[in-house]
Length: 229
Image: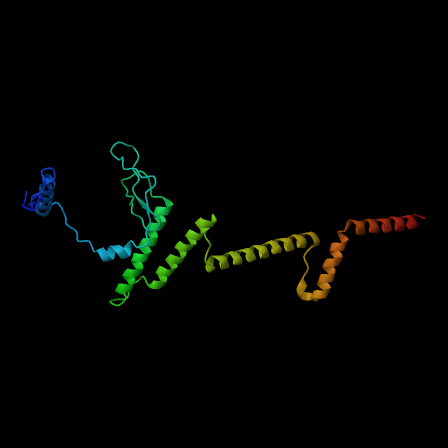
């Protein structure tokens, strides 16, 4: 005790006995990590990591790390924007649709950045228009998945479908005309005007009308009866 009545306090750099093993363990781990050639020390750029994972959400639902005791592969952390779990060929289960979509979206972004960096040096075979087309197709897949329908096709597919529909209608009309020609007989249209040709067709069609046939039959019967008298 000091003359002032307060307890004397002596400061020391040594840790309490219960915490001394922490200091020795930390120092030993640092030495082992630096001396061991099997451990690769990777420099992490904090600013680049912050930009890359900005506005990302980490999904911690349905997490399972019991690979050593479970038959099925465990599920790691997931993200709604960026895929943190990579599925390789050694695993029995394929990647899900969401994982595949997010992976392709990330690869397209990386490819676009790589093309922008290489465009100044040389002219790559893959240009920005190709990347834009891939991004548009990926957006179409996302929209179709949200709506539950088939991905919308591009303008070329729509044009080809329209042409196929028109060709189908022309073929159907041609088959119908051939059937009518078979029923009423063929006529050489080059030797008579179109109006006369249409009138001839109308007359032949009227001849196939049941009421017209009955009228002609009645007239024939009356004519036969007059001839018999």
